[in-house]
Amino acid sequence: MTDVRNLAASRDALILAHYYQTMDIQRAAGAVGDSFELAKKAASAPQKTLIFCGVRFMAESAKILCPDKTVILPVQDAGCPMADMVTPDDVRKLREKHPGAAVMAYVNTSAEVKAVCDICCTSSSAERVARSLQEEEIIFLPDKNLGAFVAARVPEKRFILFDGHCPIHHRVTADDVNAARNQYPGARILLHPECPPEAVALADGAGSTSWILQQVEQTPPGSRFIIGTEEGIIERLRETAPGRECFILKPGFVCEDMKKTTHDDVVRALNGEIPAVTLDKALMEQARKSLTRMMAVG
Ligand code: 13P
Ligand code: SF4
Image (cartoon, rainbow, N blue to C red; front, side):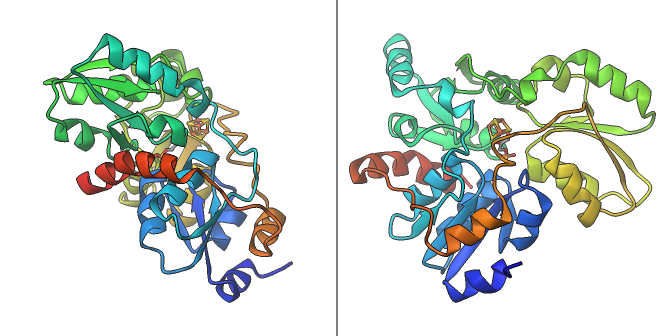
């Protein structure tokens, strides 16, 4: 098997992997993180080439932030169904209806949507981003669940939520949370805020993928957790938090798109056999405004 780390070094490339990737991809990567951490790593990477093991909106964001770098998404059709739920036309219509509102877009959006929004956010920065806005009214898109989560934490603003969702996290119900609590007594239940609000309300906490990882890693061995997000997180915790017992909230918690990337795809990407992400220059300039505004909030 090709040693991808050595191959990446010889190609002046950085392999970035989201926590939802399979463990062999996470182990091969030079940087692993949630979507916000990966965007920051991409923006500060000294390497000329970025191999983005994630889904398309993540690779596009890296390209927009680093237009002079070659950014490769190893599997061309690794997308995010939630990102596909909102179009620039939807944003225009919402702006017409709510002329005084700021438009805040989850990074899980296309470059075209980012280009017509005011500011981006990730699940870990959403609350900070909402507070940073001067406008009292915020159009939040596309994820109504993350939007409701932020709205509850920033009550001083009025939120208009777009009707989008992540098909994987949106399946979680309040009954699932109650059933898991009965099945694993004493375990802390941690959910991703892409889960519906009625499920989040019954959990012991909700936050981004890196927040969930930190919660588990910071507790002593012997602690028990029920995790309500993509199962790649559980695989990672087996390595980074040995001795803690982690159970998935419900079976089949898998993002098929995130799981498409294989070792061979990464080798092909490093060997220049996969086309790089290309985006129109003017589109990138426009989309960069909302991404860099998010990065400035921190
Ligand atoms: P994070 O921002 O927590 O990495 O989540 C990204 C994502 O797509 C969750 O479904
Ligand atoms: Fe998109 Fe959901 Fe997959 Fe995240 S888990 S990449 S939001 S489909």
